[in-house]
Structure formats: structure tokens, C-alpha cells
Length: 542
Image (tube, rainbow, N blue to C red; front, side, top):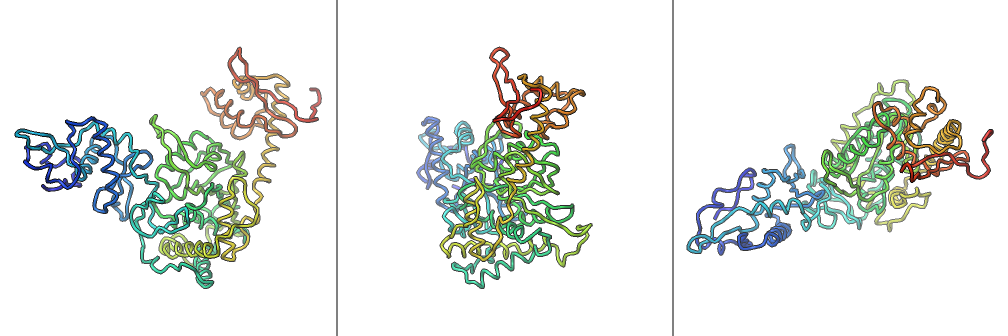
């Protein structure tokens, strides 16, 4: 009996649902399923167990649980591999049926007690597609040797159960002779290789250059960094200094399948930020670049993303929820980037300072991005050598000042750099102090303006919005925080709900001896807001 043709994704082999075949079930070297004689749950369980057991054989079809959806790893048109989700559409159901007929013999007792091959039942197929639990979980696709949580290295091609990653080697020859215990010469050569493509960029100081080397290490070291990773902001004093090229080089090292890039609205629309982040995180990128930030960036969604281990949100346009691990390294680029809110203490700034009036006209002896793409294997090899050198030294932890919420990242990346003799990591980090001071000044000005307009009165969000939009209240309008200004600038929209959400994000924060407090009106069933004094703060006339 010929096996089903996997290329026939639109329909099943013609012999299925055909004439009875004497001895068919007994001739199959695979489990036999008689759907007509079994409960649906029994059929589904047998199918799931067969799909899971198939992973023990390299010649069997492999189906994974990827983002809560059945998926396979297929050959990509441009080479390499790609993750292909199996949808609940007609073609998706046919694909899963074809795969299952490779693993299970579905039969029905026919005339003269002879078995007749049949197609897998639709109800069982839909049940598996809706509930892929029990299938091996797939966390992503990598094409370079990748570290596991225990700092061991994934070298073999195929699915790695420990990391839940699928390794499809893109350049295996580059890694045939990786030293287990690098020598000092190996480390010096690795550092020289990593410096070569980036030597012409105008890093503000050696600390910025060290921080960038730490950024290069982070995606490949990410699996054994237990905690979260801060936002890395590559900021420049002028356009054309090379910030976007540096981010693109980082993405080129991670690989096309490990890199995603988005932009965010100029006026911080956090709901839109959330939608774009969710769409970009679903393919499980190793590096996510937010390109060309404009103005001040204050996003509660981004702040939350940076300190979570899993990200959950609705699929765009659907009510279905998805959950995926948050393991991406997030990088932002922009001119004179300013971050606000909780992002100020969750961001490491990497500054470029171009001395030329037109830095985009400077000439390189080679194109850095082209160089990185052509020498990707050499650069990945250099990063692995630095990590193995740190491991051989006993995995020493960095002794510098840790960033709150990102202690593991500081200890690991700082330790790797220190073991290689690289100084300056996070030496100039004061982003939280400077950004927080500026933000407190702005919040203080807003609270004072709120107080001057409403005095001791507690007002609803709707009343506040109406007053702030009125022409006669220019002082209040001129001192609105940017996030609040964006909300009130939206035309033909009732801003009360969004104002309430914003006020909740700043309530009880003390600035200039004042704070915004909330009172709940049971009569009106709404929150009321007023400015309260803290300590000995006094205002004339109050």
C-alpha cells in the first residue's frame, strides 16, 4: 500500500475511502484507528499521541505547538527553513489529515469484514487544531548555534527539546572548530573581529562602545539570562550618524528570521504601540527594533513588555488571545531620544556623537551592513568564543552597579565583557536619574496648573477634558504631559476613559510636594480627581 503523498495538501490520496482491502489493517506498521467504533475523544487522543511520538523519528512528519497553533517547519522559498502554521481552513485541515495518514491507519469495517481505508474524521482534526496541547512546543527557529539555559550550545540540526528551538544551520562550516576553552589569543582575535565593522561609528565614548558590544552579545546570550533585558536606545545627536545601520547590523547577525522592525506613532498612541508590538512578537524574533523614534517616548505598554516573561494579547482583528514568551531584545533608534515614565529606568542609552555637519556624507572603506552580512558566521563565532571564555573562567558575575529589574542581564553581560578584559560597561548610565528629574519637573508643573484651575475641587475625567480643551485655560493646556496632550488632541472622540487610564498611571506620584489623588463617587459611579498636598507644601491663596 503506497504512503500518502505529503505534497498533496489540498486533497487526500485517492485510495482513501475506496474499496475494501482484505488484510489492510494488519499490513500497516502503525497504529490502527477505527473512528466508527471509537469515541471522538479517543480518536483525538490517539492522533495527538501519534503526532507527539513521531518526533522520535527523523523521517516522520513533525507537528508542533507554536503560539497555541499547530505548525510545521518547512523549506523556505529563499533557502533555509520557515515555520508554517496549520490553520483551521479547508486547506489547513487537509494538510493535517495528510500528515496523520502517514502516522495512523484509519479504517472502517466493510463488506465481508474486510477493512476499508478512510480519511481522518473532521471533528477530530478540528479538535486537534483548536487544542494543540500535548504536541512539542516550538519557541522559535534559529540558524546559528544557540545557547541553552544551562549555557550548553545547540549544535545539532533539528528540534532541540531542551530549548524548544528548531536549529536549521545556515553556515555549519564556520563552527566546526569552536574552542571549548578559548586561549587569550582566541579572545583577542574575537574582540578584533567584533570591532572591525564598527570602528568607524562615532560612539560618544568608550563606555558607549562597550555597551554596544554588550548589545551584540545579548541576543545570543539571551537563553541563559534568567530575568529581563532593558530597552537599548541607540541615540544620536544628528541624523545620519549611523544609529539605524548599527541596529540593522545587530539584526543581520541575528538573521532574517530572528529580526523584526516596527515604527511607533509620533504622538504616543499606546494602543497602537500595543497592536504593533503584538504583531511583531508573534514570529518570536530575537531582536525587535523600534526605528526612528520622534520626540519623547512614553509607553506603559512598552514598560510592561520589558519586565514580563510572557506577553498576552488578542490576535489582530480577532477575539482570540495569544500568549508567547518575551525573549526578544528590544532596541530603539532615534535622534536625541527621550524616554519618560517607567521607561526612564528601564532604558540603557547608547549615544553616538557625530562631529561632522553632514555625517551621512562620510566615507567608509566598506559598507558595514554588507560586511556584517558577508561575515556573519565569523562574528557569531567571535561572540560564542567570548561566552565560552566567560564559562571557562567560572562564569564570574559582574561587580558593577546593577539596574533594577535587570540584574541578571547586568551580571551576565558585564561578566562576559569583564572576563574578556573589556571595561566601561554601563559606566555612564544615569538615564533613570536625569530622565526622572525632568519628568518630575513636568509633572509638578502640570499638578500646579491643575490646582490653579480646579483649586480643591474633585472633578471627573470628562470635566477635566472639557476644561483642558477650552481656550481660556491656556496655562493648563500648555503644561499637559505629552501623553495626556495626545489624548485631548484626538477629535470627535470622548476622551474620558483614556484620561482616567492616564490619571491612574500617575496618581499618588509626588512632584513638587503635590500628588493627584482619586475619590470614587458612588452617586455618579465615576472616579473624581483632585490635587492633594504632601508634607508642608503650601500654595498662596489656598
